[in-house]
Length: 593
Ligand SMILES: [Zn+2]
Image (cartoon, rainbow, N blue to C red; front, side, top):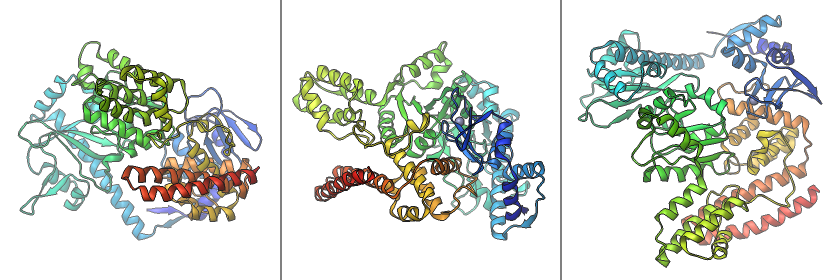
C-alpha cells in the first residue's frame, strides 16, 4: 500500500486550523493562550476541554483524551488515520504525495491485517453455526435456558464451534488462510501425531473483543460434562493477552462513560445477562481475580469500579489483590456483596433480579470497609490470640484510610466487635503502615508542588501529580529534562508515566508532533504534558524537588517489600537512606522557596 509521505503529512498538519476543526463540535472561547469549551467526548457542565492553537493540540482535563487535529477527526468521524489525513488534506487544499512503505513493515502490517480478518471470519462462522446448524440447536436451548435472548447473543456475537475435528481448519484454508495463520491466532493446534486440528470443538463460543470491537480471541464453554475443561480460552498469542482483557468492553464503554462507573463480574454469561437487563456498564474479567492490567485499563476510563465477583473465598482474595493494584491510582473500588452461590447471570434470570442487583451495586461498600467486615466476621473474639491476629489484619487497612471519619467509625466497630478499648485499636492503626502502599493520610503542611488543575487532575494521586509536573517540566526545559529522564526509572512512575518518559527520551524536542496512534492513554498524557509545559512555570529547583518526592515513594515501596520478605538488614539500610532523603527534601523545599 502506498503511504502518505512524511513531507505531505507535515504540510497537512501545518495547514490545519485545529480551532476550526474542533469548533464544528463544541463552542470554544479564549482563555489565555488556550481555547476552552465543553468536552465533545464526555458529558460535562463546566468546560475542561482545551485547545492549544499554536501547538495544534487538544486535551480534556476531565476525561484525559487528547491529540492533534488528525486524531480529533479520527475519533469524531470514526475514520482511520489515512482517511482522516485525506479528509483534512482535502479541506485545507494540501496535495498528498504517496510513497512506498518499507517492505518489512508492510509485510508485518499485512500479516496483522490478515490475522484480524481471520479472527473476524471465524467469529462470523461460529455465530452462523450457532443459529443455522442442527448441531447448534442444543447450544441455543442451553442459552435460552439461561434466559439469554437472541438480541443480546447476536450483539455479543456468541456462536457455536462444530464438534468435528477440522471444520475451522478446512473452512479457513478454503478461504485462503494458511495452517500457520490459523495456529497463530489460536484456532488450530498440533495433535500428538503431528497433525493439526481445531482447538475449539462442540463449545459455545464467546468472541473476545477489544475496545474497538476487533476480535482478539475466544472463550469456549463446554456443552457436555465429558469434554474436559468447562471453559477453554484462546491461548496467549500476539493478539490475546488474557490478563489485559475486559470482556464486553466494546459494548460497555459508552454506558461506562455515562454512568461514570464500571461493574466488574466474572463470567461471559454474567456480562450478557446484565447487558440484557439494561445494566450495560458491566464488563467481565474471565476468572475470580481482577488483574493489575485490568485495573489500569479501567482507571483510564472511570473513577469508580464496583466489583461484583463471587463472594466465595477465591473472589474475596481477588478483591484484596485488586486493592493492592489500585493503590496509587485515582480509582475508587467498591465491593457489592454477592449472595454466596449465586452469580449475576442466575440473579438476572429471576423475577426482580435486575432490581436486586442494582440495589447491591448501589449499596456496595468501600473496599476497606468490606475488608474489615470480612476479618471481623471470621474473628473469634473470645480468644486473645485470635483477637490479636484480627487486629493485625485490620490495622494496615485502616491506616490506609488516613485521618478520616470513616476510619474512626471503623475503629469503633473493630473495638466493639473484638471487645477492646478504642484507643488501643487506634494506637495499633497509627503504628501500622498503610496496607496498600497507597496515598494514606493526606499530606498536610506540605508545599503544593504540582500545578492546580481542573476536576480530574485534582483526583489524581499525589504521586501522579508529581509525575506529571516533573514530566511537563522535562518538556518545558529539555536540557534539564534529559538529565531527569535519565534518573527516572519505572519504579518511580505509573504505567502510563513510564510510557510517557520512554516517549520523551525518544522525542525530546517535539514530543507532540507525531503522537502515537496505537496508545490513546499515552497520547492523552502527552498532550496534557505539552499544554502544562506551555502554561506552568518550570525550574530546575522544582524539578529536583518533584524528583526527590518520587524517589521517596520508590524508597517506601522498596522498604515495604523488604519488610514483607522479612529482610531486616535491607530494611535497616533503606531506612537510613530514607532519613538522608528526607533531609534532602527539606533542603530542596527551602531552596524552591
Ligand atoms: Zn472530556
